[in-house]
Image (cartoon, rainbow, N blue to C red):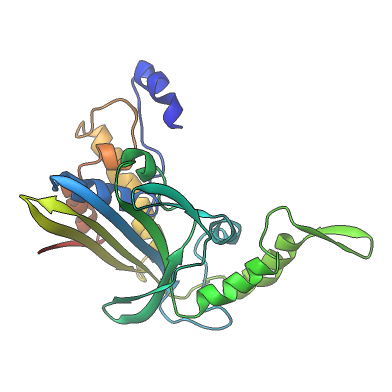
Length: 275
């Protein structure tokens, strides 16, 4: 969609792609943190939509397409490491993570999260996105990937009929992991590091958003829909005036966005460390 920039300009419209949570919210916060630094070195992104109370068999309940989730787990992840673009397998390089009232958790590579950030910050030293889950989830899902059960085009022959293994898996697992009326939570952490006034500085943005039980709106819907709504209103109110196709990190004012999200009950905190 970035290739349609000139067409959007000519039409006098503003197009902001990938405007959800990840990508979306994480892009806005990355851009905001980067704007505060004199030199940008690293962006590390962690996001997870998980049930408040995990249950077996995979300690996860889905709040969006399971097919999309399998894509994220099956396709490789694009990252920047030591200043070079790299491709790493999803569900790898697990690291422990802790949030208030949650922990320990695990975070691992999945595809799609770095999105337009790869183009916006091509000279950065480190850029990576990891998905947050309860411990043990990645190992279980990697087994399914290794068994060729998650690939979109993988087929086997059963009684003379070609069968796609992913379709069988989806039919089996989808009703088991459907969130239904359970409570979910979205955990998010964005770490933007570099130098400010010659001092090593890291800005950290963190969000813990729960389901709105009064209105029966999932945490994922609150974080996603409010992001889209806030940015659309910023365009409508002429806060955002630039025309063309613009990634979220390049066009959405982070301070205003954080304030507007807070009005809607989605609280994003900012802290920083200087060494």
